[in-house]
Length: 588
Image 1 (spheres, rainbow, N blue to C red):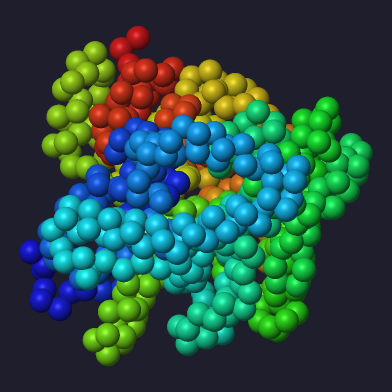
Image 2: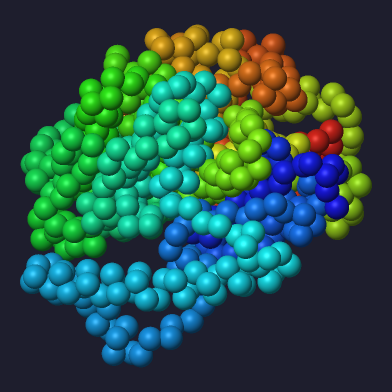
């Protein structure tokens, strides 16, 4: 039951990559999480049943109490998938499947065939999409036990735009919103002018010319997983920054470029892999990474500058998975012509459920003729937390573990870290999004470069070239970072150059190639208990920062429950886990 008759509840859903749900109450996002955390299937697609259950339980409501459910895609395809882009079942005949798989290659060799393929896609959207939308709405309505009239949908890129704009605590009026990703609802990038809560799309880029999909194609060409391992390409890039990769860059620039407020390309996105194979075979892997990263940075910067020049607006919010690239974000932030830049934390599809909530709330306010008063997100600690009873219940399943409860265990944890130990931390509400922000994190001494190898052997198994990141207390950040605009970075969405002291003190958390770091700059009010732990470590070492990486085994989602945390402790090389006030250790 609703707590008050006048409470407004909106559920936002993302059924795409890393399926997720969020719940808004009276203009505030009160709960959000990804389905993968509850099922253990990394980047799970499909209908997020378990997250919906969590959201309703957190708010003490039934699904029937929801005023509106908003889907963050027009195209319902992702509703009919599960796992990591694995379809429920293939209904098409085998000959048609083979033709569909062969079509991109034939189009690349014989471009005139693309016209026929595009015609077939239009037929699908005209005839089959409405049918699939109806099936999707009925299935969701039946599951939630609500009238299907309570289910609406919105454009994918508009969802990105709503997500970042209304999450921005420093938004201005008017503002620009720029979205960029691989593809969604037939677009891959959009520029919006927002004035008085009205979004006007100035221009969009069709998914045929996707900068994000080019980056993913290079990721795939390098033997990595597209739509998942792009961060590894970004991490690899600086190692060849001083080499000659100009030939590769010139080839990529001939493939895709910026025209005003949109991108254009020589061949369609679905043909990028053939172009890369024909033109970049036998090029060094690190030079390829460096060239595509350089191209991404240059094109995004030019796109942003074009938008500022056209509109004269210098306050911009950024959303979409491409802006997970913290090195490109750094280049954008450094532009003198930008006054206020906000990068949505975890800006991929997983947070589109948040934008769907804001869109639904605005829709209801217009309908009821009430004031639209959306509240910016305060932090990303939007997932579940667990009681002491639940923690003790989980601990009883592991009789070989030792544990001791004390409100001062954070001091003991700081001493262990100072002595070189590596701890996992499980506290409070789970973070929403791709980053561990202290509540589901592995923490360690940032001063010792050997910490990297120890963590990788224990649990993370990260590729050797990938750096870790620090959490730094806000009032000490100037000691370690070069941050001339005094930009805040509470969500690890920006890279920074490091000071001389930062290069030596945070050696385990900076990139060896370019000496940048991707910090979580922590204020006391954002996470008091985590802040006190780092402050205690600082009192012991005069270093007010810790290495922070997400608490998960390689290839698995970040842990969610006490059982997840304890199972990970048991099945990894970790020795210590600080779970709320309990310091847990293996009996070795």
